[in-house]
Every structure is written in structure tokens, then in C-alpha cells.
Image (cartoon, rainbow, N blue to C red; front, side, top):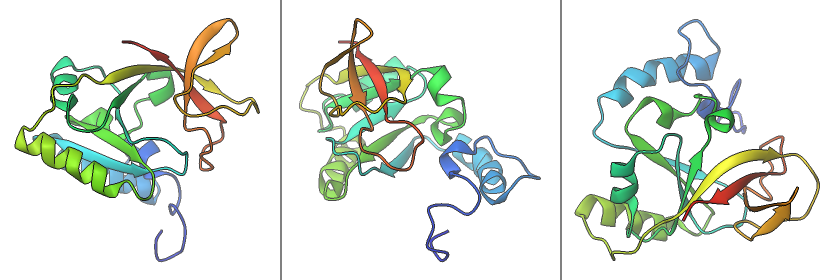
Length: 176
């Protein structure tokens, strides 16, 4: 994909898991990666977004041990994807691990958070936890992690401004 100047060859790799041995390029690659990922102690899946936001962790399954491990490492927010949004197509659905979403220019902060995690360094702070519950297709101008009222409920949008998805944003509920 890089050599072709594209984001992917046939489809987004992070929507191709668990893969298919007879599938397209990304499905075949995902199929080959799953057995390797399952053998890893911890998988850190890095993602870049153009949606202006502080970096944040993503889990597709709530795991209290992993939430505790991620707390106090320098990244302040964690988004838990609902199964209806995640659709079991993400790399982290098939291993013990998490994703980090970041903007260009945040690489040093993310690297420091990973070093803190690996080194066991924590500032003792708790994560702000958000539960992703809805996909929003409307055209309202929201800001990432800024509280909104939608259909009588309070939400915090994420991925506002991202161009690689067919939705405007995801709507989250603050858990803590």
C-alpha cells in the first residue's frame, strides 16, 4: 500500500481480522498474523488519526487488569468499544493488547507512555474511561471529547474530523 501511495491495498487491515487464508491481501495478512499475536505477552497497536485529540487508549473488550496497567502512564483517556461498533474485526480482538490513537506530533508523548508501561512507572492517576456506544452519521460540528447533548443524552464525540471513515464521529458515554 505504501509503495502504491495508498492507505491499504484492498481494505483497511484493522477491519480485516481474524482474516481469511483465501481472502484479499489484507485478509490473508491478518490470517497470518493472528497465530503470532496470540503468542505475544502484550500487543500495542499504534494508530494515527487526523481527528484533533489528545492521544487515547482503545480496548475492544473490558479487561480490568489491562485498564489498571494502562492507568497513570501519561495517556489520560481510554475508550472501550462496544461490540456493535468494534464488530470483532480489529487486531486487538485477537490478542492481549490495546490500541493507541494519536495525532502527528504526539509520538514522543506516546513513546513515553509506552516506556512508562514497560518500566512499571505510574503517576498514580486514573484513566478517564469512555464507552463507545453509537456511530454518528450526521453533519453537526462537534469537538473531540467535548460534552454534547444528542437525543436527550450526554455524549462525548471521538474521531471528529477523521476522513478515513464513512461516519462523522463515534459517540461515547463517560464511565467515570
